[in-house]
Amino acid sequence: MIHAQNLRKQFGDVVAVEDVSFSAPDGAVTGLLGPNGAGKTTSLRIVYGLLKPGGGKVEIDGIDVAQRPMAAQARIGVLPDISGLYPRLTAREHIRYYGNLHGLQGAELESRIDKWVEILSLQEIIERRVAGFSHGERTKVALARALVHNPQNILLDEPTNGLDVMSTRAVRELIRHLRAEGRCVVFSSHIMQEVSALCDRIVVIAHGRVVAEGAADDLLALTGKTSLEDAFVALAGPHGEAA
Image (cartoon, rainbow, N blue to C red):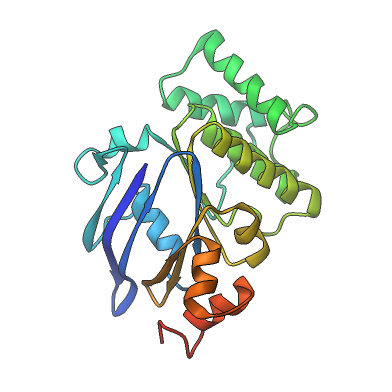
């Protein structure tokens, strides 16, 4: 479970996150929905410990990220907005390296790598160097890298951004698979169809603040709209609740 409370982050004169609070339970998909520049990525970076908040705190399975960052990060797997793969390493070497960082070695690690190769259909590229991979192939490798240590909590920053139809379907099926396993899944998106299809709970962020949260039906009831897109515009648009 992930619990974020009153997060705040400022870069110079720009307040990127003003007051963001949300809880993401196990066995559910929680979506952070907001327009570009709303503060979704900054909030996620605070949650997984890449950025220190100017205020507020984050707990991962009851572990305070600021006080025990290594313990908290051992409980999470992250697909960041930029995958950061090394072009000279093979896909297997990437996944193995991250497994080593989490203390995995030998037969156990190789078994876990093989598991994700199967789930993500990486058989044809697993021994190839990453240089020349398509965007979808790079995303799949980054996902396997993030999941090899079997984390309970998974953070995905716009995981289907720029993917083709087949890769998008594969990522969505993976998210459903993780939820079925009882994991806590948090992902950011601005794609209404994706959020509506996957999320058990939606947190709408605009101008660095949470302006609404709940299931899709809750947001429709709150705004009196009949589509999630219309509800989103009503909440986060220039004349919405966050304006």
